Length: 164
Image (cartoon, rainbow, N blue to C red; front, side, top):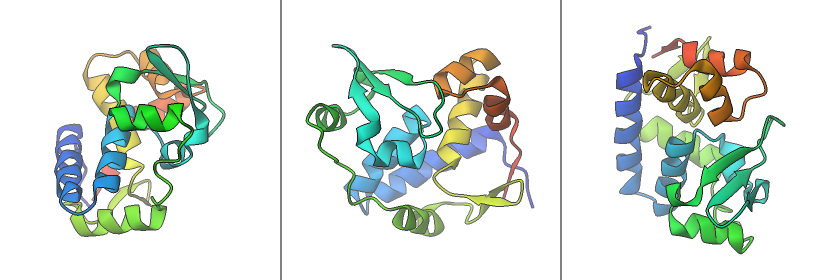
């Protein structure tokens, strides 16, 4: 097994998103949003977790009961903001099985692991934390950006050794 470095991980995820864009607009949009937010699969799938906080922000109530996350609306495609505003489950047809299938078909490293556990869409969360940390965010700032309850949880993402 080879250790994945953060630069290659980010590059491979961007290549993957581009590859999916040629096959499915819905999954392309879904993965793109995962990439820019570091959200878990279920957090995007269940739009009921989202609400409009104010004129310029969206609020996400996280899947693991961690601190809610605040996002600028401008970070999202307009259709996603509209879906939340209209309570329209835009991603109703997205399934974890199909997302995993796309990873098997289009991801450059066919199998990626964290502590022997295979990862597919959760790679976006690991990448998000690693990229924030590489951008000189403190560990506490990464914790806040990811909506994690404890610094321990965000450190797992930052320090995770991914292999392929």
